[in-house]
Image (cartoon, rainbow, N blue to C red; front, side, top):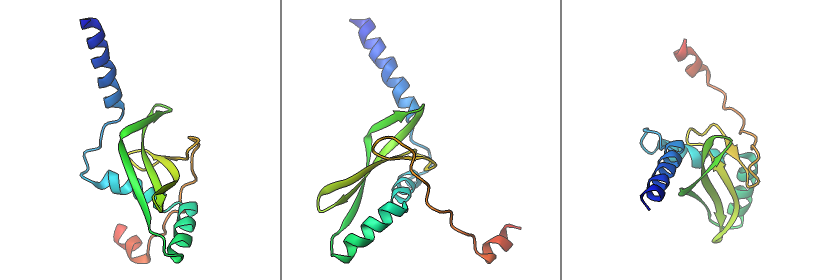
Length: 122
């Protein structure tokens, strides 16, 4: 019985280690939701619904992370009228987004830096 308990503990520790929460306050949470909100397909969907008066919400689910390709992904659901429209999976660093079929989603276009920001970086 002890061997089974020890094996379960090791398995849980390994899984938890693969999906650690970055030590950056709430930034990873906001970044994950923002990545989904800024996807072109999500922006078009939410804009259409807002015109019709429907409230769009995003839910970040941390209790069941997805491990895919050796990486941890958090689940972000796009919701309208109490129904999930789509589910996305985002890495805690926000660099990778997968769709429901676990295929990579095209990243939103990079924002261009203003002339002031470029001058300040020099």
